[in-house]
Image (cartoon, rainbow, N blue to C red; front, side, top):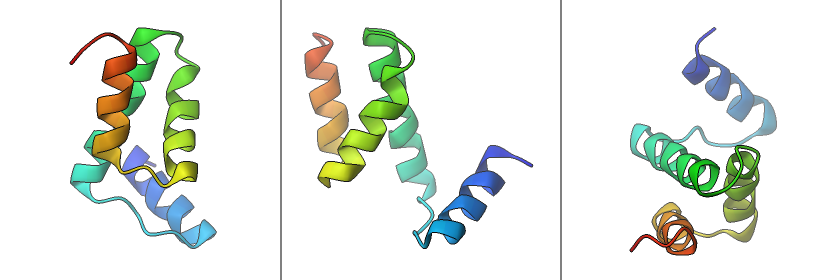
Length: 71
């Protein structure tokens, strides 16, 4: 099973809408920003925090880059 297939099944199982291709890429960018700026474990937690707080992906990514010292 591919990652995309797993995400589709997971989204359906929890009653969520699967992310678009663009959202998927932005989520991965956010995860990479968190992982490279600190520890790898920060990646999934940062994504969860942004989602739980209802923060749009662009704002979450910009915030993460700022914390990492990148504009």
